[in-house]
Length: 197
Image (cartoon, rainbow, N blue to C red):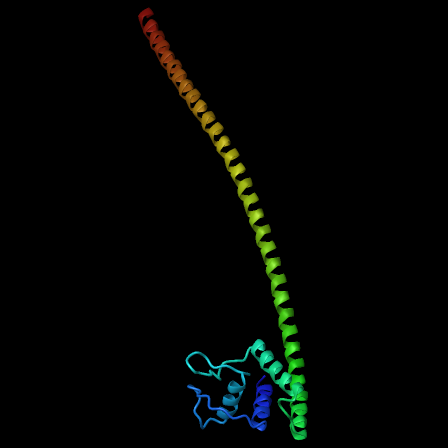
């Protein structure tokens, strides 16, 4: 992009365009000042409302295409004339620029491939998360059912322990009564035995 802008600046300077545009953020002694001034005067580039050029910012493809289109129109209409040396320089820069575009296209294709891979990975991860969430919920549901069954078992066992406890108390009371009856019987037998002697 920069090479093409330099070519456009070179063409305009060689065409002898004169103007007096004041650029607020570039000093007149800057090497590109005259070129930028002429590009602005011809309408290829525009200044911001505050008169600044902001030359350190990248050029968008839209701005570049518009400027290049206007330049091509002027060359085709004969409004802008090029010398043979200018055409050779443009051809040389154009050939260099083709390599950069091819490299750019390769990089874009690589980035698009990586983005596609990331998107595919994202889909796989989302599917894995959905599957894991479903399995987790199913596990929770199964555990809830098992907990419910265990609670019922505990209630049954608690009732059985209560019943056994009551039976044990009754059995113990019956044993105590039988034991008391036995002692009373032994005591009566001893008394009867003593009385018969």
